[in-house]
Length: 466
Image (cartoon, rainbow, N blue to C red; front, side):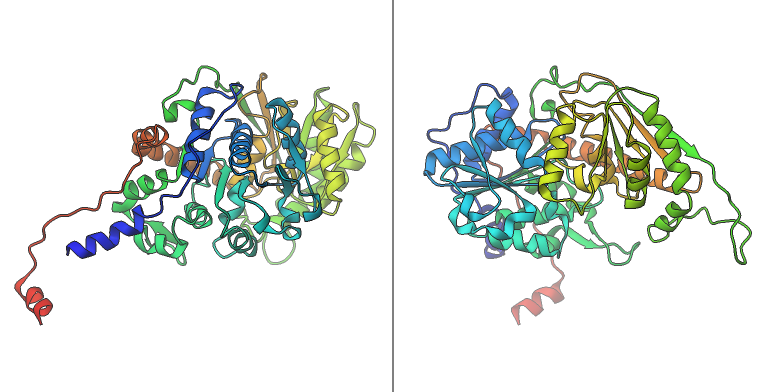
């Protein structure tokens, strides 16, 4: 039995990577908790920073990358979502870190480089001694092509850092994919230890009830998770968010329908959602236009379909302050420039989709947005809202949500997932706060394997002897 415990312990404790502790310098421009995270992540060598929106993941990753390059004398690559690269280059100037934006391997310099995920295939990963995944929730897909490309491309990269907001409340598999990217443990290995099939829902895995504490303790050995500085023992005084108001605008629609049924079904599913949106398109767009024209302030309009964007752009072509519309078919250069122009105040209205501009960007220049359409994706909604409602925003934020009266269940789903997220964060905080604080102070946690003595029945002893 002793040999068995030793085998199990090797699964958890032999993956302490060789990080950087000597010669580390962290800019005084970072907050105290950010400086501590940088030093911890460098000492780990490979780590994740799960920090909520506005907690300063960009300066953390810039200081981490600067130290890795400074120590090794070799290039480092940051991979970021579309349009975030240019913003990171700008942020680098604030913290005296030079960041080179590159689209292909020919643009790489011996320093800190940044590119978009869309361009990753154009680079040779072996050139880089360190890599940072900005908005690393891109790893959420368990078997996705992009996930496999990223993990395989940097499997031999010595230093690795992942930065994203707290993972989705109903997708703990995302955590396992981060562990696999870092080289901590294969996703399949972790699944067998902490997860089981959910008998209440087909094709769904859930955390074993008696494994919750053990699982989050393990995660804390390679990741830091925080919503506020106090989650890791620091003051929240400078991180108080302004008020957030979510206003629902219900568009009432014709309930009768053609065919055998007298009324349209209220049970809109993910598969029938877009059919219903086509029926209510004009009503929702008209409501959104009224909201937009009721203010002179900058405002972002979030769409789900190109049809919505087309009608909005046409109606707002000569609106006060001007408007710009960005969709997936536009060039990378156009998307990046449009985001920069909106941030700089060239346009009052930005029309786009959460899948394009909902991740990574800072739109703190704006405190209002309109969802002319909503989907069942809580992460998409949450991230789109947090482009404005984030630490550093000085004004109250208003979120206008336009939905048809047949779409109440979409709002119900979003609110349920918001509660799930809050519950998960509270669970994590209650379990790992002391562990995280110890980790950040260099007191590395080692998972304890229970060594209880069991009184085995006689027939089992006989079988073992035989």
